[in-house]
Amino acid sequence: MKLMIASDIHGSAFYCRKLLDAFEKEQPDRLLLLGDLLYHGPRNDLPLQYLPKEVISMLNGVKESLLCVRGNCDTEVDQMVLEFPILSDSCFLYWNGRAIFATHGHHINPQNPPFLRPGDILLNGHTHVPKWERMGEAYYLNPGSVSIPKEGSTQSYVILEEESLVFKTINGEIYREESLPII
Image (cartoon, rainbow, N blue to C red):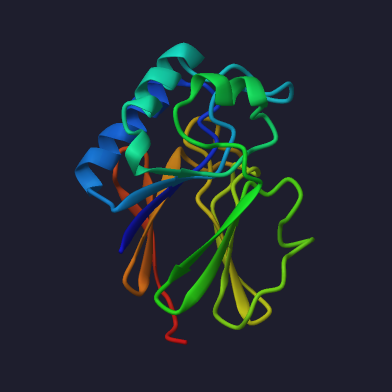
């Protein structure tokens, strides 16, 4: 299974369009969005082309391919206009013998992790900073932000396939590749 992972669109029609262009090129089985889809939040500047209504239309257009968890900026009123579920705080995926615990990251994160077995992955967005690191015998993965990167990072997403993960810029350029250890 090929999984595309992205987070923190924050209502940017410009970067949502770029993400969906990358989605079309990558042809993953699913696009997992880690929250903060429409609203930019009070701590962030407005992202480029802040047009949540356009983002709604674009995401509804690919609804059958999406898996989503709720971000700290996502609300019940957002769910009223989106045609796919976004209000679950977390989800479990099983992939190549690993459990992946996906959540936005504002509650459950490396400082407050769920129980993970060796080789499992905690998957968060929220910080807008890409990460791949060991967390005891498990791993922590953050794809960064689609629209408002922080700490000198770039707009990005991750492709998880077979035993590898690839960090890519929103334009599809690889900037980091990792092999997952066999468990």
